[in-house]
Image (cartoon, rainbow, N blue to C red; front, side, top):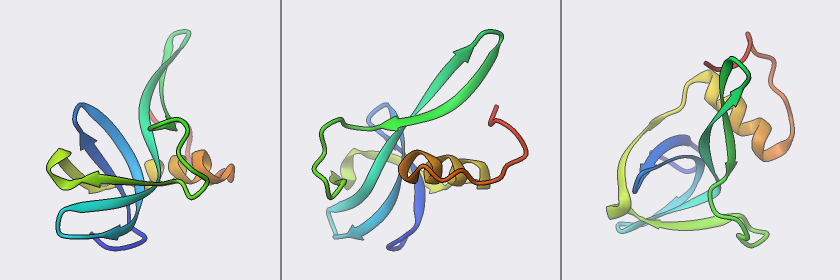
Length: 99
């Protein structure tokens, strides 16, 4: 885990995707954390991202104590593109919706 990595975390029951801003021995500073949500669109289920906590300052930085993180991993290509789209509005060309 290093600065600039986009990772997926399990934080106290929530699945969160965020970019690592910095790390200390006890905490991570996450940039623009987004929570994973399941969206039912008729007979199709899709995955989306929404802000993890509403009202974060314009810096979009959130400190998370490491003892609250249950697990983390690198995101796959589809989730990386979804995070970029959710945080910047840029849409990455993909092979279709994430299922």
